[in-house]
Length: 215
Picture (spheres, rainbow, N blue to C red):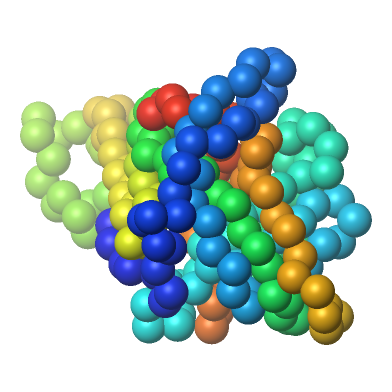
C-alpha cells in the first residue's frame, strides 16, 4: 500500500470535465487535471510517455498514451519497454490527465507463477511448507492451490493512493523548445515505478476513467 502526494500537485481549479473516447468508441466526460511542467518525457513512436514524480523523488507514476489501439500496444510490452521505464530526457509538457479511482476484479496469478518456474509450491507431492507450519492440521501436506490478486489505484490533484493485496490459498494435499501537448483522452497504460531500481510496483490500464472497475 502506498499513499504519496505528487512532487508538484495539480491545481484543483484547473480541473474540468473533458471528452474521453473509450475502446468501444463511447464518449465519456471524466474530470481532467491540467498542468504544464518539465517532466521526464519521451515519444518512442509507439506512445507518448510521461513520468510524474511523487514526493521524495523515488517513486514515479508513468502514463503511456499509445498512438494506436491499447490492446496491440499492451501485447508488445516487455520488462524493458519505454512505458515501464522512466525516460532519460525531459521536456516541457502541457499535460491533461483524467482523474480516476479504480479497484480491479480479483484474478488468479497461479498460471503466471507456474510459467515463471514456481511449480513445486503448487505440487501436492513436492511442496514443503513445514518451516511455516511444522504441524499442519490433521497431518495434511500443505501446498499452494491458488494465488489471488486484487489492486486499487486512485489518481487525483494532490497525489496517488494505491494498494494491492495478494491471498495465497493453501490446500491440503531529446531537448524540446516548445511545450509538448499530451492530452490523455483515450485508453492508456499507467504504472508506478521505483525510480532508483526500476522495480515495477503497479501496472494497469484505463479504458474508461469514469468507471471504478475499468482496468
